[in-house]
Length: 267
Image 1 (cartoon, rainbow, N blue to C red):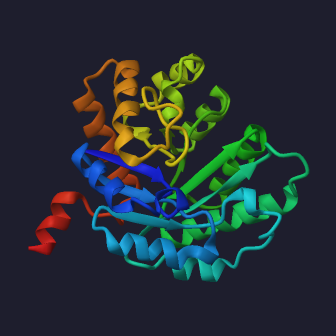
Image 2 (cartoon, rainbow, N blue to C red; image 1 turned 30 degrees about the vertical axis):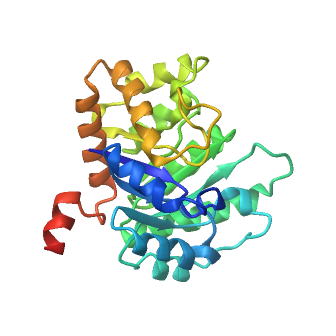
């Protein structure tokens, strides 16, 4: 079994063949997919998608790239929406300094609101961090001091220092197809030091298709290619890597039932 811990099935890239995408994922052994929210205002759409497919779950949150349009987030509303039966996480939220001129004070405030939502709900926070390692580590450390919360550093491409800071705080780290790229040896070196019980795998579909699918639209079935590379990096079998990362995802996103439990409940 594999779990794609981060994809965006609600994106228009999948409108024409969403049923086929889900079916191909199941055929590839991907038994759970978490479709990650990027706009709180569109939560109804992503929740409806999760309701339509037994294999699909979702989160609720505001992507940091939207901070220009959404400089404030209503904490109570975020917590209320997270009560949806198929919502298993908060986010994705975080910091993104890739584009110049981002209003950082607002970004920090919105990120901290998501952290508080994770703390209040007990759901894991899905963290997006790009070109913001120092501030990200500082906020995570400060907020963890106020009270514990669960989180995953998703699509990790940051520094060893941020990886070590996240691990020290008890966070999980998820790797996408980027780890399969030829020029990603430094990232593979970081993956090698992540403990097996903190490791997750994802696609971030429709983006970042792994080798040998690079350049194509990504989809959850392709998470198997990323898992194969991570298995080689960790020196374990693909079956072991798949079982371990799936168990980790179910532990972190513990509102999401394991496939066997869901099937038994449906009988």
